[in-house]
View 1 (cartoon, rainbow, N blue to C red):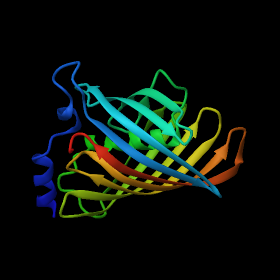
View 2: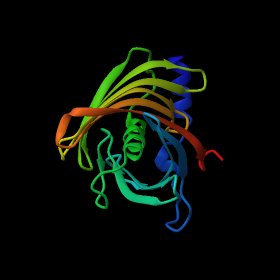
View 3: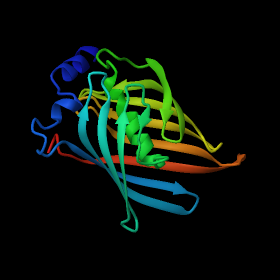
Length: 212
């Protein structure tokens, strides 16, 4: 299985290789369908990620757009660092869905060749409006090069609120992006960290211009 994943990775192009050679050419875009549930309230959204560029330090530069139920739109320019840290000058804080997708997308900077069940590591750093600490544990690798991770994320926000997420991510090592993310979260309120609410988040890749 390790040899198979190494072959898949070595024969695949990383995210930056899918960027256009000309500045005005269309780049790679991925689209995710999001369902977030809190009690009886269901929120549906579509998040699109456009890959704009990168740096020698493996920082990905992306445009993020989110369309929610009422078709309103959020936009942010985000730098994704290898440790899952995110930087954005345009927004004080990303939505939970945007933050999750972008931060977990940083796994493409890891050397996944040869990973096996039980391998684990963690990354930490700033995100807009706070800091994250994310722990990964490999649950398995399949014959198509998909890596299943257990994921635990702690987020401490500057306003005093916090979020703790845990669940799984199915990562497409051939496409270098998450295929599915399923997390359950415990979110506190600003000013009253003892009061929380439970949220379930389901994120699914529905379109990738790199592959289609």
